[in-house]
Length: 226
Length: 46
Image 1 (cartoon, helix red, strand yellow):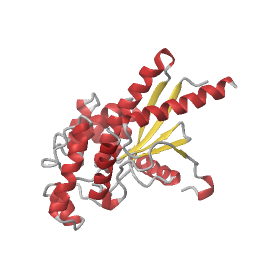
Image 2 (cartoon, one colour):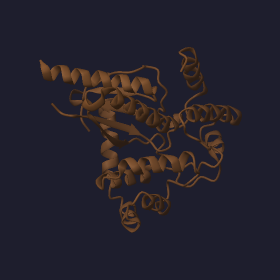
Image 3 (cartoon, rainbow over the protein chains, first blue to last red):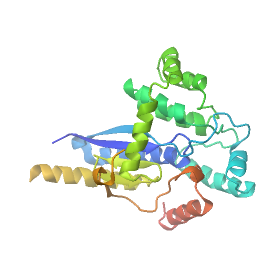
Image 4 (cartoon, one colour):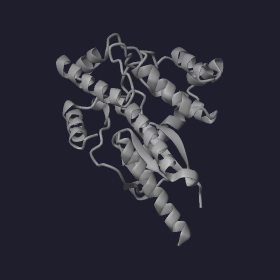
């Protein structure tokens, strides 16, 4: 019997529900581990690339309201109301979103950085760093120089990150993730695949994540004892 | 790209109406989706 549960998570950096879902999943996984005690399996997480808006330019001169109003044709007041709602939900999850300083950008290079980080055992740290930088700190996560700075903050080699991003070293891995998402039928993110058999869509409540992990683990344990 | 027959089959777990972002026009979810999620959380006491 394997003593771990594998969670594959499809998400985008520019996805407010992905950061909220990440936090809720972490809370749920911690609750599951506590409930399971000494017999708790390791929960192994791997992030996968999903671009919500691949046509977004790297540099956009304006804030999030400007972007959604001009590029998506949404009334500014409606956008403002939506952002206030998301900010409130994020706050309840312990995240201080700041859309006033957010720098809307293309995320394909950020996804490549996450693959670079995965190859060096730093993907979880890099994912958290990029999401926090984008949603709470107003940092730019589309330009390679800015991404290299953020990579260095989680202990990666800045110069080598620059080389990798400038040469699109991991672009094929990004595309492979997107192809697999399509094969799974993923239509929105965050999307969680558990042990390659179960799918969980969206920013579920922490208790739901804990319940799902309990269910999967109970089924695995039961199957092993039959 | 794999064809339909090779697609991994997933069993969906969890709530079916949890909020997510979908496609190019949904980098930010619609107000209706957010409102529904907040109302649901309020009703369930979460």
